[in-house]
Image (cartoon, rainbow over the protein chains, first blue to last red):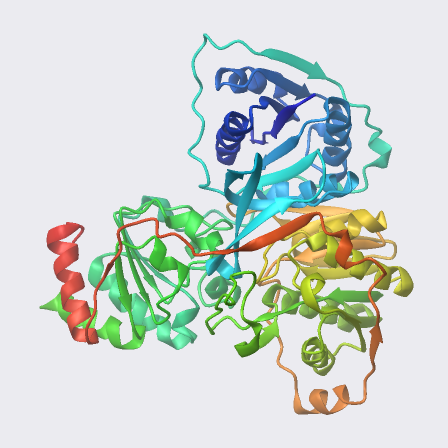
Length: 325
Length: 257
C-alpha cells in the first residue's frame, strides 16, 4: 500500500508538542509525493488521540492498544510498530524527533535493515524522490541525503522543521482503526520505573522577560561573574547551554535547550554560545536575539537579530559601560 | 565487568570546518581532531564502573590512522587496551550510522563484553543512533540518554534522562548497550603516569568486515550552506562601538530595554 505512516507521541495524557510538527511534515511529504497519510498512536489514550489526528487531516489513523504499551519501553514500541509496518507496508514512516524517538526508532528501522534518517530539517523533491537535509558538524553544514534502500524508509523530523499541523475541525472524516498488537510482555527486556523529577524547579525561565545565557565561550567558572553582572544590569535571568550545566557551573534549572527549559523572552543575549540545534530549539522563540561570539560562522548567528562578532570578554564590559551611561 | 567503550574521533570544536571544493564532504586536510565529547563521558562512566566493581575497559574506534591518538588518550585515562578498526574513506565518515554499527558489531561479538557504552551522539554527523543500531544488530537490550549506572550481577539499573528535567530508572538484563548523556560525571584528565603507561598498552588493529562500505542505506549527496533564518544585523567596529550600537538598537529599534 503506497502510504506514509506518521508515528505520533503522547506525553502524560496529551500530545507531545513535536507530534503535530511531524504530522505537518507527513502531510507535506504526502502532497509532494502523492502518497496518502496515515497516523499511528501507540499507548494509552490512543483511541481518543486518534480522533484528533483525524481532524488534523490524515485519512486513516491506527490506534495501537495493549497493556504492554501503557508505559514506554523500546522493546514494546519496536515490536508493536514493527508489526504494523510489516502489515501496512508504508513507503515512509515518519517520527517527531523526541527523546523517545531517539530511543526506539533506530532499532525499529534496523529490524527492517534500514537506517533512520534522523532529525531531518526538511526535504526537496529531485527526480521524483525526496532529498532530505540534516544538520552536520553542529549546524556548520547541511548534509543532503537520499535513501538507497527500497520502502519502507524511516525519517524523523527535527523540532521546528515544520509548523505544527492544526486540527481542521469536525468535518474531517478519517477511519480510526484500533489494533491490538501481538505482544508478548515476557519478551520486553527493559523494566521501567515511574518517571520522576529531581526537585521542584527553583527557576522558571519560561516566565523571564530577559535572559542572558552563557555557553562554552565563557571558558571558566570564574568568568560567570561577568555574565551575572550583565544579567543584573539588564534585570535578566542567567541561563546556560548544556556544557555549562555538565561542568557543574550552574544548576540544571538554568539550562535552556531540548534537555532543559524552552524559553521565549523578549530579549535573549547569547554569550559565547555556538548554537547547536539542541540549544536553539529551546530559545529560538525569543523576540529579540543577540549573539556575541568570536566565530563569525557560529550557527547562532543564523537566528540572531543582532550579531556581534568578537571577544565576549571585551564586548561584555563595554556593554556594561554602555548600559550605565 | 568487561566493558567495551565505542568512541569516535571528530573535528575539534573550536576550529572552522570548511567544505571541500566539490562540496562533497569537508576539507579534512586542515583539521584538528579530538575525542567526541559524549564518548569521552562514556569512557569516564566505564572507568568509574571498573573502579567501583572491577573488570576491564576496552576502547574501540573505527576510522583512519589518526584515531590511534583518540585510543591512546583513552588508554592514558585508564582503559586497559584498545581495538582500532582500520577504515578510511566514505565508510569512516559515519554518514550512515548503520555502517559504523556493523563494524563495531563484529568487534563486540569477538570480545563478548557485558556492557557496551558509547556517547549518545557524535558532534560531527550527529545521528545519535550508532549505539541503538548496534544493540539491535547484536540482539541486546539498550537504554539511551543514560546519566547514572548501577551495575548488578546479571543486570544493570540505569537512570535515563527524559525531556524537560524528568528522569526514569530502567533495569536491563546483561549484556546490554548504553548510550551515555554528556555530563554523567566530571571528566578526568590523563595523568603523566597514565600517559607513560599508555605507551605500553596494546592497540590491536583489525580489518572491518567485508562489504562494509557497500552496506550504506543512506547516501550523502553533498553539503549545502546553512541558510540564514533572520535578517541579522552585524554590528561591526571595536568592542565599545559594537556595545554602544547594540544598546541603541535594543532601546530604540527592538524596544526591549
